Image 1 (cartoon, rainbow, N blue to C red):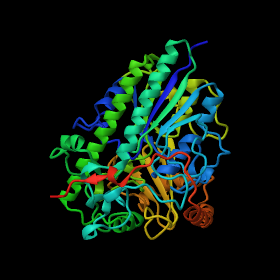
Image 2: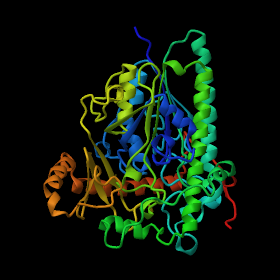
Image 3: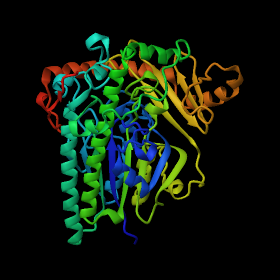
Image 4: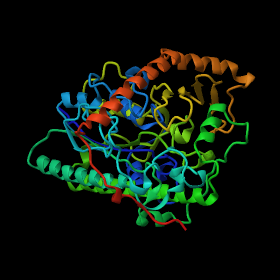
Length: 501
């Protein structure tokens, strides 16, 4: 019997694929990821199942779309009754180890993994005090205005340290130590294959990078390439989101400061990944290991005047996806087929010879990685559904679903007209064809795809009910203060920011 591969999945948070040498960046931000790409396959049209952390990550685990597992927001709990790729690999005899970021809320902090070496820095329960970030509290997303009405993420950005990086240091250390242990076990004759997931929080905001990473890019990061749209030229929901994000008054200095830090964070992430890959080599395990790198969603990083994720624009919903498997996947290859982050789970399952998840929508990428011309439907989906419980939402809950089908991207935005882009003719998404008479036929065809099995009104009712249920859990957590089973505590002093000039 052919020896089954080990699997090492390197999974980051909020990495814009454009800020990576393998995807065109020229500033030397990601030498280790670039080397990984040269040894394997880079997928150029990969998308996330939702442009926000928790639903995207939970869909990767199960292979289901968010609406099929009722997991749409950061506070939705994935049922322990749903099998994941970790369950499948464990059932096939794999050692399954999760290290670091999982971003799962609720009592189940394993979801099929036999071991959890480092937990999230946030609590496992609603209503419990969030992670301590000192002066950076509120700078990890659109949490409202700071000084001069500017979003806190931009106002509190620059050179310093986020507590998130302290967590990623622990994740890196634990991953390297376990790889060394596994290498020694292999040398002693233990051929049990493993699947290890190293989950990073970087380069998620706060946009604050350590001096050694920040200074590499100071004065070198170009301004955003795609300008903000002219007034009245943007879809009304996007215009509303923009107006409530508190970023419109950002100066060129604000933008440069945040972008410089973001490049620094990506470089810090890449450095940690390099350590892990060298540990894999030192353990003598590289030759028979499938390595996957991906992120849960993207980051606008100031393009078109937007920040964070939360939209169906390419910078937000597109993700980096790189796979390397010596002798089994071609080296230095690019695959332009349309695929999804959830497909990484199906790929691991096929590589391991494990049982497919019965209700999974994920498709193994091994076939198209080996032959980009292989039979494959260039089509995938993403959802963005919110309630009113967090500042990520603005003043209006939204229900959205996107389909990318060939050259077309279509977005249903409940209560608004649709969004339509021709990505072949307009890769920067500058011309919205959502109300173009000349494109009514393609809109109708794509609308049928989006709405097939997906009921926006029913989903809205379910989200509203879940919001009421979560309010009870939030009050319960605040009063009873349950203990988090998997949490790496960080302190306020782990986060600091150099005074702004």
